[in-house]
Length: 335
Ligand code: SF4
Picture 1 (cartoon, rainbow, N blue to C red):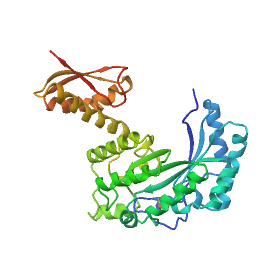
Picture 2: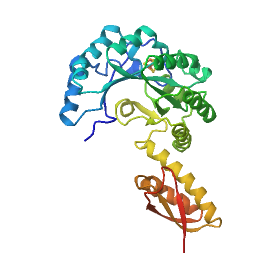
Picture 3: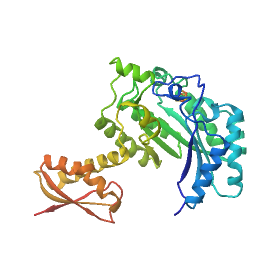
């Protein structure tokens, strides 16, 4: 198996983080989550090496504040990765951090230790939304940090959230446009989930925060996905992973184990509607042709897209067609 695009991921909790972002449960889980040390880094890489060909794989330190954790601890983790980097068993190191925890000295250190990609938790590019959610940084910090990261030759990843208190779908689209104007190499998009032990959980219980319904989050994230892909920026994650913090502390919000598939399905549904309206304005039977890898997205989870089309008067079958581009739907009338 090719090692391309594989992340050997370790979650690094930020104990003693001075911030309290509305959605973050680090304070309530610190102590409950085991902090990885050098032996855990080695064990993770060794396990991955035994399990597969890791050429092209990156060691990823996720958790949000890598450059803000204690310096000795940061260096312990980076040191543990060095033998694998030197032997070419891993292709690089990926870290995620806060936009205001990036400066030239820390970036120089990361470079020296073979870090190749840095992801910034931007979350929003609206200062009001950032303030309301206790982020403790501004949109300008995101722009400044992004520039520094790119100038020092790292791959830049940007992460944003939707459905934060004070944000709107239009606001999220505007944030995405501003983030894309920074020309990141990758994007991640996370709808806000209410986790136990967070300020958001208190707001939600008091009736002062209503999470985005799943359907609304899917429509917004589908539009964001299209925006990023049209700008040539791959979205490497859409929606939180199953397990970990979600499994432990889910309280409310638009979480789904196959969130990305729902968003891709939404784009197929919208394109099928347009294609069908053109050939069958009065409704009728049709075959929908799509790229082979997207047949299930066209049908939708539990054939939901086909059901929705039926409600609008279109009885459709889906066929794989290798000549179709991603998201393209060719509709053919059937007798
Ligand atoms: S998300 Fe916010 S509160 Fe949580 S660790 Fe990062 S900076 Fe701290």
